[in-house]
Length: 263
Image (tube, rainbow, N blue to C red; front, side, top):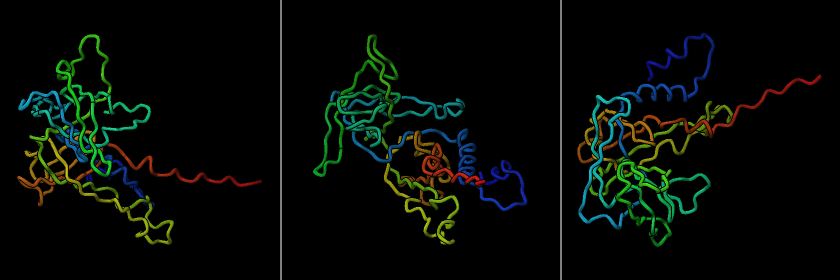
């Protein structure tokens, strides 16, 4: 990406600041066609399927890359206990929210439609488990005749087969496009306190094959690189290279409008 960025910018003798989004877009362009896909849950909530046959394990196939069939398929094991991401469940959903809600339905991607029957919380009121039932007639995208198609589709990782990993969520070092510009040059006042967060996640088994230095797209999350030094068998470490989309665009206020001179 660093080599490609100057190509797209051209050459100028004038001093200028290049927005960070330009570099991030270059990274996405490079990684999108090459990074294999995988499910990863970074803020897990346990989802238990109460009517799932005890001990049963199914396996679903998905493309390693949706546009590169030559990369083959990945096999994703599915059992009666999986983890979903916390953002895919909402007790008080806003309008237009189609993921899982109490009493509501959602499809576990590539697998089945589940209905949330019970919400389990800890002593502090935090949701720790969702007890659901599944419809066996909805396997792999099927919708039974006469049934309403479920809009919400969420990803998951099997509790039994998921691979634990450390995930380092790197973000922009500064909160401002021109650090220090509004603080008399003191750029330290524009340091982003959330420029890195470290979480413990769970990923599908295919990520175990990502070599140190290799890349993968965690679906709906972003592009990641297996740490060249710290990632190893039994202790996977992934560093975020770039999110799937520019999350800073909505946070950045528009530049002030130029004031017109008065007559």
